[in-house]
Image 1 (cartoon, helix red, strand yellow):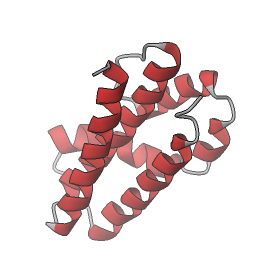
Image 2 (cartoon, one colour):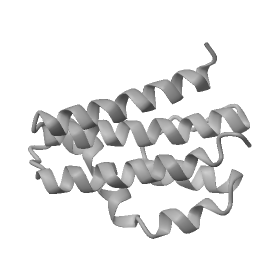
Image 3 (cartoon, one colour):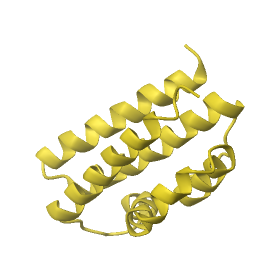
Length: 126
């Protein structure tokens, strides 16, 4: 299996784990898994298109890299700045901080992540 395909499969698994976490009321883990899913989805597109991606966990930096390859994507992500910032915080928070998340927050970020996945799927065939 090629590396980029592994990233795609792993992104989908993290998304599924987030859904399961919400059902179990593990909202902090759900949001962490959403961050991982989103991060890997972007890395998948970068690896597929240009053969590499920066080894970073910052979604905003990955989006900036993706914008260089697909300039039109920025319009979509500018309208979700708050959600992206929340996911970036979740990466650090789930590991090191005592942050508790609500069901509403987890569901909001799940909805955003699914919407972002749908949007990014348009670029998978390029």
